[in-house]
Image (cartoon, rainbow, N blue to C red; front, top):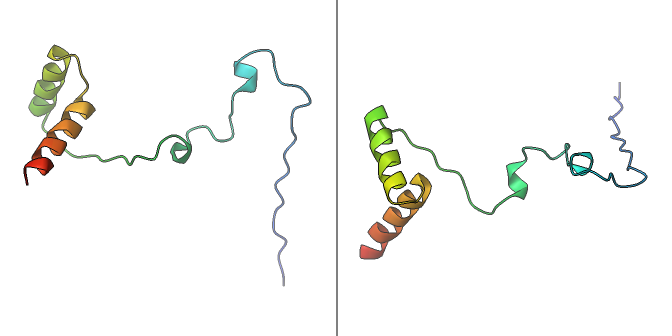
Length: 79
């Protein structure tokens, strides 16, 4: 027996809202594919390493992510 496929129906608002919250995109919320072309990379460190890295980043007015990227770029350019 054939099954019917659901049809998604959307209703466009008649006029845009006067408030920012009223115009907020709630359908694509959290969809990281629309933000950047970059990819997320995660890795494990000990709690002590994390504290040291975070302190170093704060002392040098940068982010942990920027430190990691710059370190990798330096390391790869040496080869």
